[in-house]
Each structure stands twice: as C-alpha cells, then as structure tokens.
Image (cartoon, rainbow, N blue to C red; front, top):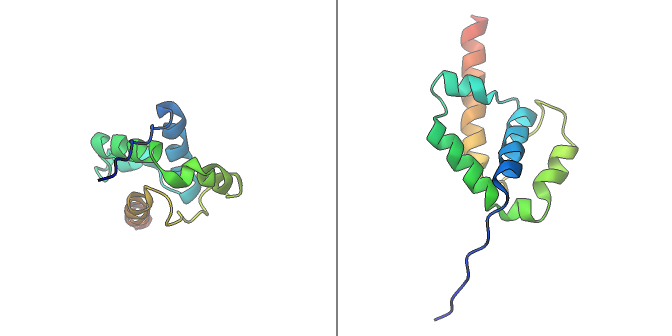
Length: 102
C-alpha cells in the first residue's frame, strides 16, 4: 500500500482574491448572488478552499488566464476547481439580469 502525503493548501487571502477575480472575469457578481440566495457563505468558503488546493492554479493556470481576460468575458476552464460553481453562478446571474430587464 502506498501513502500519499496531502498537498499543502495555498494562502487563503491569495485564493480569496483569485476566486473573486475569476468571478469578476466571468461577469458573476458575488455580492448580488449572496444577496439573492444563490450563494451561501458556506458555499463561498468552499469555493475559496477548493481554490487553495487547485492543481491548475499550482501550475499558474489561473494567474495566466486572468491576466489575459477582459472583465465579464471569460469562460471558466474545465481545469478550474470551481468550474461547476462558476457555471451555476453565471446562470443565476443571467436569470437575475433577465428578471431585472423585465
């Protein structure tokens, strides 16, 4: 039986900002999604935690991708540990925008 040591997690503040930056890059307003109930505090904490352990970020993928994106235009790559959450929040943002438009 082989034993694998756990990977250390990245810095919490760094990954909080990376997750917020990815949200901004994809057009997701995290504060609005929290206000309308689409994102709980526990879910947000989980997103930051997943980001801290993301292999794609460890290889520089997130930083590189965010440096090349226009705000609101990015598509979250499948390699992102939070791709499913960002897809869900993107859909919630589109629904909220549609309700506001009328």
